[in-house]
Length: 325
Image (cartoon, helix red, strand yellow):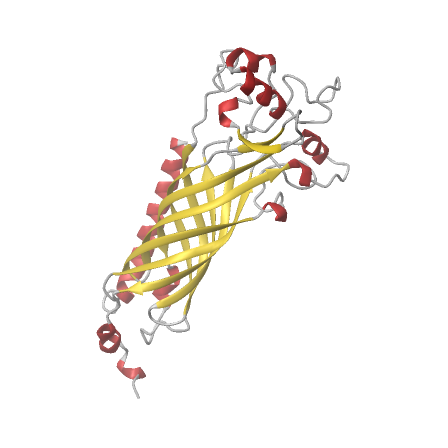
């Protein structure tokens, strides 16, 4: 993780140096003063992890394993500070939901049959706070009027975030047949924290992530703009969906949990219809998830922003004289 972050920071610093070098010769005389923007975001939030997916081998692919029925709408609010037109720093809060369900997989006779028969599902609320840098590289090529109305600006985003999640699974009461959503972390479905599995630590429900993405901003006027942004979150946990490693011995639930919790955990950790079939790949020690890939999620949102404290005198004083008629 540290090596990844150090490499990422070096790349970002190198990019900033290049942009600054190109930027100052052409814009140091005409760039406006700093300003703030505030706005709101709405758009789909999509989970990429062990559960659900499409045909073939599940690989947490960015769009290959995307199930449309699992799409949930996320909402956000942000405040951005722009020291110049080409650079911004954004603080944003986002609320959304993610979900995954093996039952949605269409069996085409390939490797997807394992995930289909695994038959697990989950849902989780995502509450995220992040700070990020926005870089507008095409500003260095803009000439003429400083009026932004009608302009399109592509941009890149990278930052750091903190998000909270809480995976839940559906539990069907054998007595009443009633289905309810149950928190999965306290059930230790993969033996997290059990002495028999020393390598499986209890996972925390609040974690760091790295948001990164691209966007395209359209200016309706000097003070109002609308952007479409795709933002991918790299995380450092494989337990957003509570699935990562192998099936454990269910007798351990009765050793470490209360009797009522043990019954629920025993029901939820392995919901495969082939669970009691010898040689079915759903027995103790068999693969339950893929620990070689951490979970991820992304949003594809529309962002409406209003520029705060815009100085109209700046517009009049900095227009290119050649464009006045």
